[in-house]
Amino acid sequence: MLALVALAVLAPLVAPRSPNVQRLDASLGPPSWAYPLGGDEFGRDILSRLVYGARVSLWVAGLSVGIALLLGTAAGLVAGYRRDWSDLALMRIMDALLTVPSLILALAIAAALGPGARNAAIAIGLVYIPHFARPVRAQVLSLADREFVAAARALGVPETRVLFRHILPNVLSTVVVLASLNAGFAIMWEASLSFLGVGVQPPAPSWGAMLRTGYPFLEQAPWVAIAPGCAILLAVLGFILLGDRLQQALDPKLNETISRSVT
Amino acid sequence: MARSIAARLVLTVPVLLLVSLLVFSLLLLIPGDPALVILGPDASPVEVRRLSRELGTDRPIVVQYAAWLGRALAGDLGRSPRTGQPVVAAVGERLPPTVELAVLGMVLAIAGGGALGLAAGWRPGSLIDRATAWLATLGIAIPTFLLAILLILGLSLRAGLLPPSGYVPWRESVAGNLRAMVLPAMTVAATMAAVIARVVRSSVLETRGELYVVTARAKGLSEAAIYLRHVLRNALVPILAVTGLQVGRLMGGMVITETMFAIPGIGRLAVDSVLARDFLTVQGVVLVMALWVLLANLLVDALNLVVDPRITRV
Figure 1 (tube, rainbow over the protein chains, first blue to last red):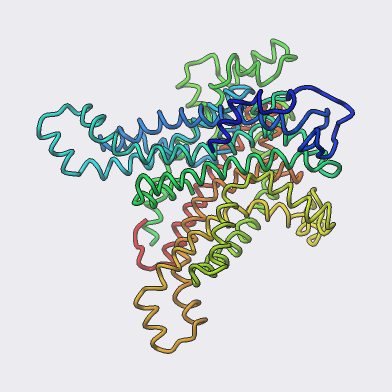
Figure 2 (cartoon, rainbow over the protein chains, first blue to last red; figure 1 turned 30 degrees about the horizontal axis):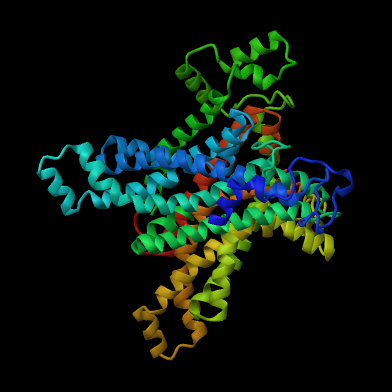
């Protein structure tokens, strides 16, 4: 995972060529020393485009998880702590968000907002709010009955302070694990949206868009589509495994709530 | 039983209302005048004004929503400016291939994932168990389009076993229809099968230690009988629960699968409409898919009552 981040940051240094230089003689060329993963339909170096594409993927993942994390955690905290009409209302909204298949909803939102990486990230972030709100709420519900919370209240600590100083730190480990898992899925959804033509637009080097343009050449030059596909798979796997590790390290008891929220 | 199902039905009404609000607000997200965006830059001002009035965009949002909801309840979601066809008819026309693909995919996922999970759970730590764990992680992480590409490349272009894409209506040829559906159904099923395999494995592991399984073994029942009569039945409850939860994800995968295999279903319709900025049709598809997920979950709850008599409330 660190390697992926390093790759994205150092893209101009690592990439053997510029991602947008076209050399028509290398068009759809097979993998070679000069072009380790082959060339695409315009003779651009696929490896270099993958390296630059890591930037797009990570940026979208970061932004969308950021949106979902902030709004979802806030909603989960309030709903779980107040347990009144706001809980009921917020959770029904989450139910509604979960009822619409997430890819369709993200597709529709991204389409309404218009193309581009930022809008795709916003769409994915909005769709993922329940993935944070639900597990956080579940945890707050169980925390709110614990002695240390009752003690803080009995001492006259203001409600907001109880929420932020006593409850929030206890849900943070859940949030971190969720963030890692969802970052993996956000990369997958960004690629899906770009693949369908709604997210990042060519000629920007995005893994999903590369797959979209390489797909028609599957028979003559399968590497054009398979290389970005494998990049996506590795990135998603990386984040999921990272999430699993974090979960085991931070709080093994959380297994149940988290795996349920993701699957 | 009928009562608890009725109670569950009542609970879905507020969710349904919120979904409709969500679908409606999609139009509000479009920057600028929705009528202008829907009709495109070539539309005449007269047309734009007519659609504005039809959509009611010149009135307050609450009034717009109420009017839209009223029409939606009467089965009127507007007319697609792209094809001139009523949205409800367009969606209905595209529904059969999607339903077929979803059903085939689900059957495949339950059979494949269930079998893997049962095998893995019966011999924890064995080769099958470890292989299943890896397959399941891979199945969850693999993007639909990559799986589709690999399947097309391996089973169709290289081995020549199956057609790479296309759709044959079953009225024309049942065999041709099924042949064309094998690869898409496998693509759609993968993720769901992975999740089911995981859940079934842990359910089997849990059941294996139960006293009634020990008793059954002490009675001298054969392993097969124990498995079929006692373990399998208990594994059905989590399979059902996961299937219900996964229906939404399955639908998402269908959008990509239908696009890649050129199947004229509602997923493909959604993508085409999004690319053509035909938002009225997009609204229709989103609404139908949400209804589908709600119905599937109701069905799962009802089946749960049948499978597990201990559950009396949902």
